[in-house]
Length: 326
Ligand code: NAD
Ligand code: UDP
Image (cartoon, rainbow, N blue to C red; front, side):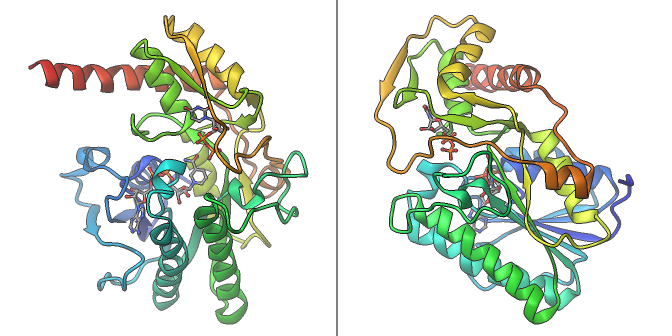
């Protein structure tokens, strides 16, 4: 992997958690980056440090609508879509349209400019998996009419659009199936487990465990994930299919809560809440394909990643309290 990423790059969804870290890495590698975002869940503060960066610009638009004139790009990353269940379920039709129409618009943009396209897909395409760990060859177990379907089926349709663009138009497309990712710049009100548990622990509020806490996830630190996305996009040969990007260390929600509680020294009690409908019971990526094609694997241990995330949220929450008092 070189340190140079020349040319014009579009990051749709670049004001969000992962997108803003990706933009930082691209700018550091020398790319000229345009962020396209509707600020549905993204935040200006994630990009504020780039305000004076001449190689960065920002366009506010909704990818589900016809795109404004943007010029041509060598690379198009599509990360535009709310990723947290409460956020993507708030307006399910818009989530589905973001995945389908948004991906269609961005594929057309990449095609018009002769660029390469990367789709941020998700482990949710595997649904509540009957195969464990999940390999890219597994077709998944998704409820097409449940409350998660707007996101899961939307992302599956986006993959279909991407591979059809390759088959029909010869477009260079790459698809990353991203597993649960965490780190600084998640929103405190994001609703996902790491941000919820860390914020609750820091505020000594009850920690919410959905169901019995025995369901598992595998958490990848955002820096590792961004490195995987860059390697996938910059690999000279187009990979034959989607590539899982995630950390294979699997942990129960209850064990995650225990770890965060010890690390923060919280006084928070644990409270049980009902398990959401269609909540996957187990999830762990098989990353053999990423290791083989990209020479990539996560390097940040969960404890180290959580330490950085806890420190970031402590500052974030502290600032809010200061503002409210001041
Ligand atoms: P996020 O919600 O922080 O970021 C999503 C960004 O997309 C936000 O800036 C939001 O404003 C923008 N957006 C949403 N709808 C849009 C629209 N219609 N038009 C323009 N912009 C729009 O989420 P994230 O965690 O950074 O996720 C980024 C991408 O990675 C998403 O596509 C998500 O599906 C995928 N992903 C994330 C995870 C994870 O654990 N974080 C796991 C799997 C896949
Ligand atoms: N979860 C939980 N408490 C919370 C938020 C989530 O126990 O406050 C559980 C949730 O039910 C799921 C797991 O943690 O089993 C991961 O949830 P998240 O929303 O982070 O990601 P996803 O379900 O999309 O993988």
